Image 1 (tube, rainbow, N blue to C red):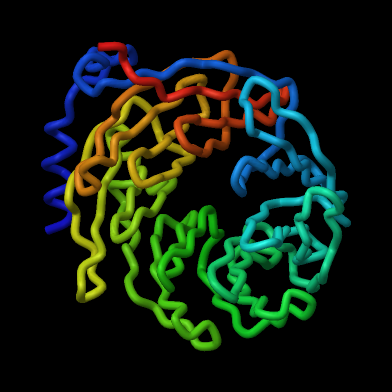
Image 2 (cartoon, rainbow, N blue to C red):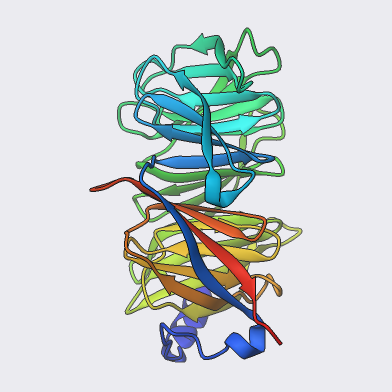
Length: 326
């Protein structure tokens, strides 16, 4: 049944123009307002303080005014930082072959609190008192680490998959995993010592899953079939996934990020897409903008989109979500 729905929606896709004709209807537009000639692979915020990782350093910047961002301090990790997350007063760094580093992220004097040897730490997400770390020589394991005592992290369990983990998120005691074998897994981690499978969106030879993001009960999954698309699923009370909508897209969404009101989608090209999540069951492409870079990572904070282009000439680009003058 699901395949039939997908096939039907793919044949009813609409044409999309890069220059949106709906600016006067949705009341917003995008404007590139600032660029910085430094960059990194990931940016996270705590209030007006931004944490930017690049190679083996975590740079701490003041983002109070987007036109005058300035460096506050730098934390030097023991190895290349593959990924990181922040929670409370701490930053949690996935440092490759050296594993996990827990850092007091106070910008006046950031310093390491503890470390844990893990096998090739690649990706990390923190939720509650646990960190979820993608590890393994084949990038196919999630290590679950108890971080209740920041000075003494403890590995409590792990989950192995039959494929490379290309993306991971944790929301509301659910762990979401996308594999390069074209499988999408949902794991219940209410008891992190004994995680259990909830749902598997199995291999589908007519679709390729490329990326996803999660907002509340909704999962937005980027797919490639005859043309790129975005499928919206909703988690039902019986833990089944139900398709609520599907749209065609002008490119493959390789990186996505969702807030309460908006979604952000990047294709690896110069185009940045803003999605409207006003009706979360039926997202739409609201606006788009092209910049002189090819961003690979993006995040939305307040009315600003921050994108990072780490290759060639590393840069940070800032786009404002602005209201149309009436």
